[in-house]
Length: 144
Image (cartoon, rainbow, N blue to C red):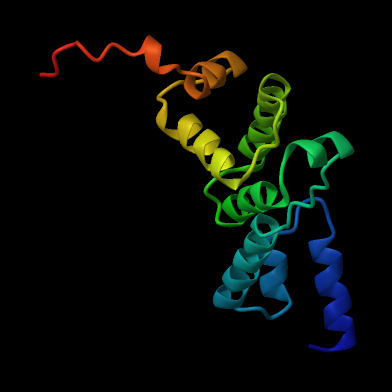
């Protein structure tokens, strides 16, 4: 594409409403336009989520626990909203437990959130799950 063609292309793409018809007038085929639009969509989806832990979060989460969350985010197992929700719940859980959230505990938190069937998990739910005492479980109940 010539320098003029590139400038025309950029003018079309930087307008509020770029159209396929204008791109076709530049000489792009339907396949080229489709591939270009798909690459734009993929580029938006693959944006990295740059998250730096605050000092309090660093004291609460071990590097392994945070790395595990980042890994789940990169695999798209969790989204950014869930990522932040898990960090918030971990911070709250740490206030009650008075110990750092490690990789194993983070895995337990994530699994509980996913498999609990609860719509919205609260810190009370997590505390109930993590602080169940053997004396609270009835072993005499008959299992069907």
